[in-house]
Image (tube, rainbow, N blue to C red; front, top):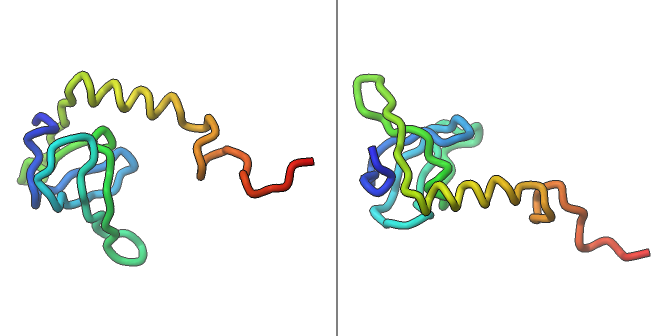
Length: 99
């Protein structure tokens, strides 16, 4: 299934293994989802489309998602930037006094 064909109410599996329900019909690189079965209850938020892995095809089958070239490029750039000074990653805190 193409990423642009994913609609509200569909269940998807994310790259980190969580299963989520799509909450919107937007097109683009960010979609609103509700992650199901998280430790402290369901969690809702925006997720980059390139973090989607598979869509529930029914009957216990999961179908891989096909991405456009633009979406694949965005994922490559995001993966390349991991750990290069992005807040919340391995970057040093910007609040520390400089010596």
